[in-house]
Image 1 (cartoon, rainbow over the protein chains, first blue to last red):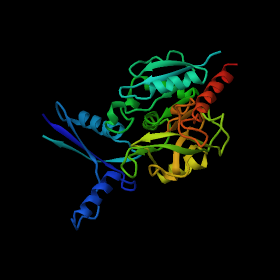
Image 2 (image 1 turned 45 degrees about the vertical axis):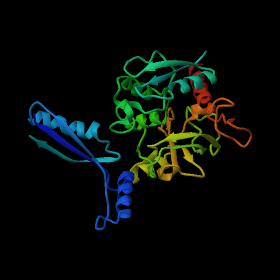
Image 3 (image 1 turned 90 degrees about the vertical axis):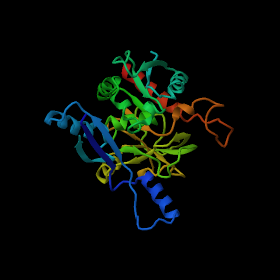
Image 4 (image 1 turned 120 degrees about the vertical axis):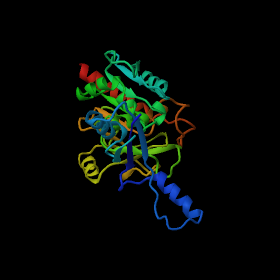
Length: 81
Length: 235
């Protein structure tokens, strides 16, 4: 079955407390060269078929339900067979 | 008349019975309502209670904001009905776009529970009219996703139009912008806040005060204010 993958990230300008916590852990472990960590969400939507109507619906629910545009951005919508 | 105040229970609501008790102590009749219904049972005011609806999946309050009864809640809000969102209920009101901004994970990543000092910034709402502007109150706070955030433009509008209903005093417990603890809409009928007024309504069961253990009842004024607003409208 084809899958539509939607990626959502916290807005770049807003504090990401989860990413900050992981970033702090990496620093404590002595991992260098990784200056920042941000944590987002990946949604895998299984669909019967991929056509323009399905993609349009996926884009709509990504913007209106899967993300909250006040605090998050949809950064990717792609089809994975 | 006796005001009838609906309290909506969602899957994962925790403080719905506490909210009903607060309504009763304020002299009104609590009316239990169910998220899956489209019937507000003719209530005069509404409380969206605290808890972890749908396990806070997706985003806190996000799935509850899409519940069947929320279409009636939005209609009632537009008609001016007093609606109070407490904690998870505040998150629902924000997700339903009845109040501006968003609520994210506390800046320190921890769940927090404390007796919290607040300043009443706006005493002209249906839920705050019994307070004086600038009055300090103490009610319990308990949440993990209480960090209020929004764009700079929205923040300017919120501050400029006096939509900040409550601000944290002493300690900002979660990293909220401008120490914002609660908001009102322009009309003053829809109010949401992270701290819990329904847990500060009866002597012996409230937050600590300098006077005596658990003697804080500042939360009761939220409910008596709304009852007064309903009665005034009915006359």
